Length: 196
Length: 210
Image (cartoon, rainbow over all chains, first blue to last red; front, side, top):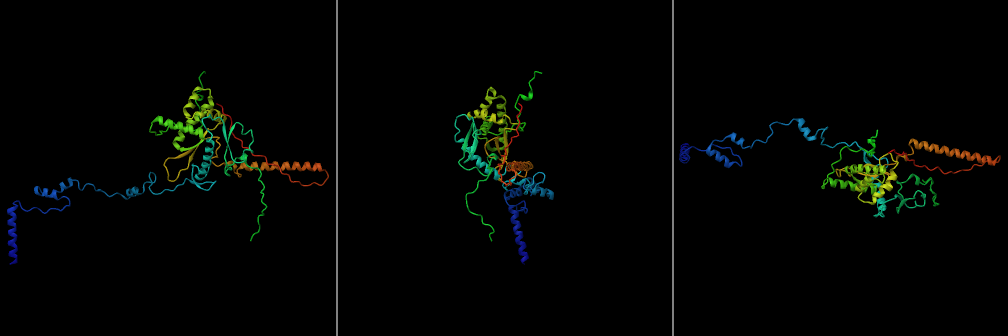
């Protein structure tokens, strides 16, 4: 009974379809997001075509072959002889014999150079204080505190003396200016011995 | 036979000069590059020690060497040399310095007149290398450690020994003299202090033949 009813209803629906769509019902289509319009157009005129879909360029940009392990590792780490991407060991660093800081081979030690640079800057400023538009005709001699009397007068002859208002730094000693004897201290304090 | 000695027509520099000049980029083109180099040479002659980028220092060094060398060879009565000095030294009071200070200083040198060091950079810091360019014989403290002061170097050990021996001889002489004076009297030991002979730096610079 129920089967007969189902068949008759189906027949009726088919009859209606035949009335409104004389070419038959549309074929079942693949559901692709974003291509509703195109698919409908295709369906209305011709059958669904995989070749046309490929021609649209949707499936082009994919690798065809898997990269080898060697290629993948080279891309990741580089190549030791040409470009090595991970950290490298620096073998050109040494320790300065004078100050103990590290420096690059062939380059001045940063600590020692900084010391010299600051003193040089002070001296240059002092020397240029009196440089005007007059012609520069004399060598410059730089003397620190308490050195003017010690220097022989003929050594200073014909030279421009620039006096620094400070003691000569310990590390910047001229051999000729070194004191040959150490002055005796005036303190009477006795150094304690055998403590503890 | 009347040909001039080609090797003496131009100054022979005591530094290594690159066969091709560096292309020091400047927005004003080659004129800007030359102006920059002239400023550098002027600053070098004025300050005697400057710190700047390696490339420009190396370029300017050759021109400074040539200028000093020509000044020594030709003197201040030579028109071309004076024009060269006028071109390279932007501050004209330094032309006097070139002929009256630098020429007497470097006359007998047989090494280069300038010295160049690589200066340290902050890590990682700027990409460009820095350098220190200086004239020899400047009054500033030396940039490299003076290794001649090391007591353990062989020549210093030998000098020390020679000094000790000299002192010993002097003492022995003095003792003999005292003994001769006192005759048969009892000899008294006297402590004698004699000043050490001062060490003097000798510059091993031989005069050059130009």
